[in-house]
Image (cartoon, rainbow, N blue to C red):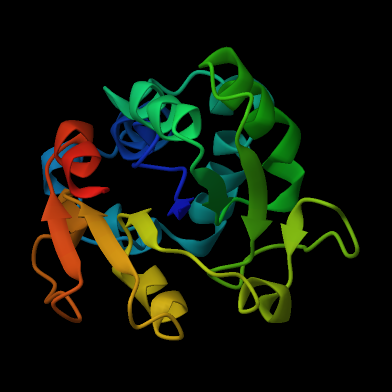
Length: 198
């Protein structure tokens, strides 16, 4: 059994943190529940310069390490590994965030999972030929039976695996989207996800 798990807003509460972070940086108040777009620049109505500043600040190691775990994430993933399942964390974070992301996983008891930085959204200054960055052609050689993902923009990366079951972690920015097919299931929490992986 091979399982793909996204990092931000599946393993940890990134958007909840961003809501407070944007208020702190720019005095722009958008409660977590009102984050309607995966595109944070659009969500917070940021100018290009503000958005760039936000992304630089948000990817500092001390900030990445401060994100709260989504309840039940590490327990569920470790239960899968105990059963012999192969779990990969595939994040759209830039390669420069790898070390802090790896440390976050280790601190949360997820030292047995592999972590890959995959340039899902075309915004990485990609580190070529590293062990942890996935080129598009390498990603498409991988097979997964299940995926846990919150971003509708990432669904296109599952089209080559028509049998894969996708657990869509229910978040404000994906509640208005139509799920692409019968293999997609909206899940409110990790307990639900754990029950669907058989």
